[in-house]
Image (cartoon, helix red, strand yellow):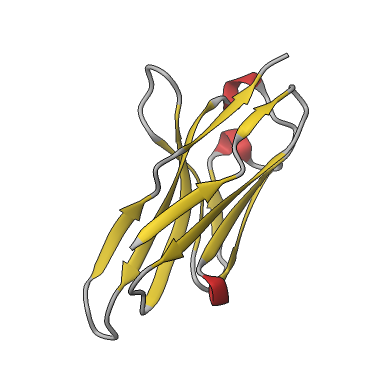
Length: 120
């Protein structure tokens, strides 16, 4: 299984970016998908997550500015980031909980990360 992220880049404060995460490989089902971020010198932290049924949760620091969504048919998750702040600067990682078989165990997979830089 591969998770491929895209959409990172540099933007001025107040700007917007949309991240995408596409999962491919032997996939029976994907449970939760999420976005985490890691800034220099800090631990990786959850930004937002969404279940297969569409229930989502967010870190307090991004509530009202970021929106997570997913396309179950295409095994893809998105993170719409608006009103970006310099403190949002980090490497953003996609995570997915995936089953390869109908009754098989679930595994956690990570993408390679995409850099988001917010600076004037």
